[in-house]
Amino acid sequence: MKKTTTAYIGLGSNLSNPKIQVSNAAKEIAHIASSEVIALSALYLSKPMGPQDQDDYINAVIAITTSLSALELLDALQAIENAAGRIRKDNRWGARILDCDILLYGNESIENERLTVPHYGMKQREFVLLPLAEIAPTLQLPDGSAVSELADNINNNGIIKLPLSPS
Image (cartoon, rainbow, N blue to C red; front, side):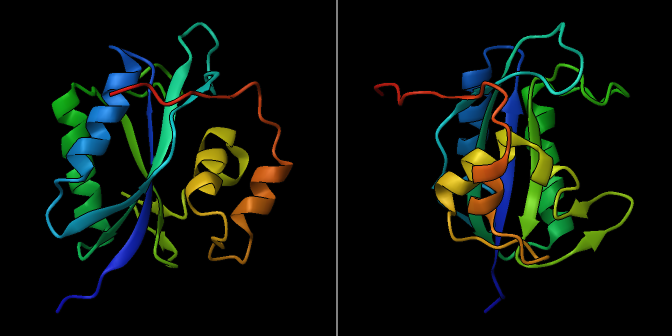
């Protein structure tokens, strides 16, 4: 039996009906081979991180167990982004149809040309920490930081946790 790892994935969108983009991404992640969803946060409405002349974002965090390697998981997530119509450009903090970022992959630290885990900016991003703390309040980062403590101490920048909509 292959070893499984718990991975946390940040989801975000601010184009083409962002709520649907993030919800559809979560559904697609549930279909990734050798993986199982274990938790999904609420949706959060957040201000853009970069240029402010773009729409607000919808964000969420999803937790899965997977027997895929980190790079295999990255490939699967990029396929989901591409299927949603994601176009990769050099506008680092520009508007996007879908962003699926591996935040954590087990307790591993990974740094190569394709992937940095833990995600390099997660400790400074309320739209990552607040949904992550919602689904994994006791989680510790590889450096020993407590997610709940980081979330309690971050400026929330006006982020809004959206109510569950009736299905």
